[in-house]
Length: 169
Image 1 (cartoon, helix red, strand yellow):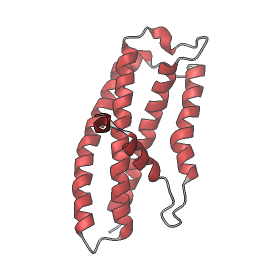
Image 2: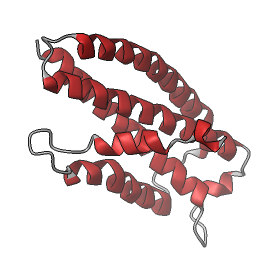
Image 3: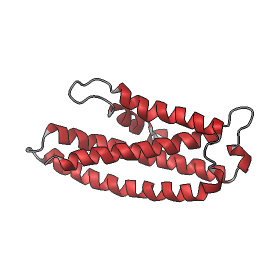
């Protein structure tokens, strides 16, 4: 029953896209940028209260929902392209690999959009003090910063990979 909603395959596929194609080694710089940087930036923003999110929850929810919907459509388009590229014997290996990686990155982007939307809705019902610097650690406030930054970085990653695939004739 739980296997129907298991998201770990999406996370694993996204994780596996962080490798150097030519050397087949793990791309640690990419992993640090995509996971450590959002955590560090979220901590910095949360503890310094650099940006107050509470006043912009509805705007952020609208943004994440619209972009998440676009990602669903893009996933369907990439799936169609992936089928064509996989069946084309003239298609190069790099294009096939990037198409699969884009598929995994978009699926992960949709997952992050869903988590971010859930956290934004959850924080909408909290009081504004949730985003203020307080004693103790507020997981919800920090997680919002983390997932918003992760979502934006993942969008940039998807854009770059789509550009690479479409730019090479």
